[in-house]
Length: 80
Image 1 (spheres, rainbow, N blue to C red):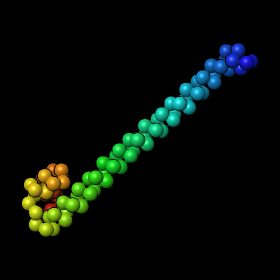
Image 2: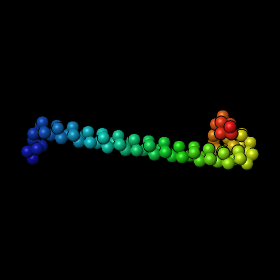
Image 3: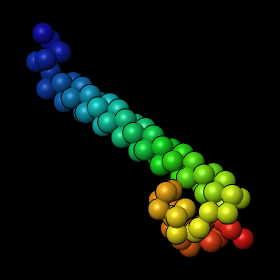
Image 4: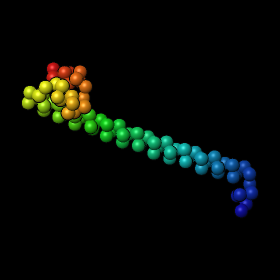
């Protein structure tokens, strides 16, 4: 009761609470973005792995691009 009547302490509390919420929100956002990047990187790594296997088996570059979603340039780069 006394705390809520002290304008300065109440304002300090509100600022501190907002800072905590902002921090938690930032951490959650960064974690979600990190997960998205990790999944994207993992998918690309798997596509490269498949493309390399297909190149070993003599598959056509255009066919590999269709199957994996990798660019033709990227596949030609892998072929070297």
